Length: 283
Image 1: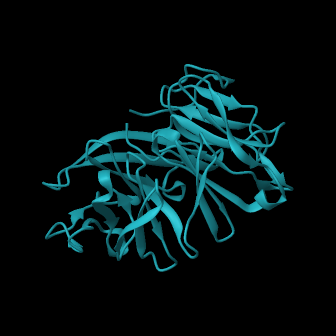
Image 2: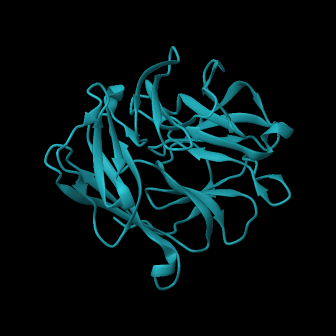
């Protein structure tokens, strides 16, 4: 399935999940959302610039069903649900001078938002506004599909695994990656991104005798687990390797037991889209 440009409209309710977001053709307002169904919608109420040419943060949930951003007129941090059009204000968080270099990320399901400022990171409950401070030197890297656990990495990409509620360490692993359901397994790219390794958290060792080979001729970009324990890998063919510019992304479904890899989706991001934000789950 290849997704191209579609009709542009203002973001409302009843929209399909977002495939990617970005600024189209010029580094100027508004943010646009390219949907899996092929349409393009304008996110007119989202802040675009924090100061000068510095882009204000925006985040997509891994399934593309939720979008987090700072509201243009009120300054509130909000999370929009694409299926209903509901815009939920996150209690206690609003735009300030401290947010000029902020980072946003969304957990699966849109329940938690990660707010990073400098080297400080916190995980905020979208409904209550309660926040858990991530230990200094660690950055949240991936949530389990049920958002009950989060993996946080240090500068050497070593990782700790934490329950989200209450926030407490449940394990440590020597390499960061994608966290499986219940936080039991970490999928990671091996040296030189040549294959996928699986790490058994409880046993403290590899979960497979041999890594799973990756598709050749493409650059792997991310790994994600689905709620039913399936693994997916995203790859990209960079724009410099494609005539006409742009980048082509592909999703592959991986069987962790057999190592079998099957391509399930391909889509292109035109070169006219500046610094696209791509969702993190295969369809």
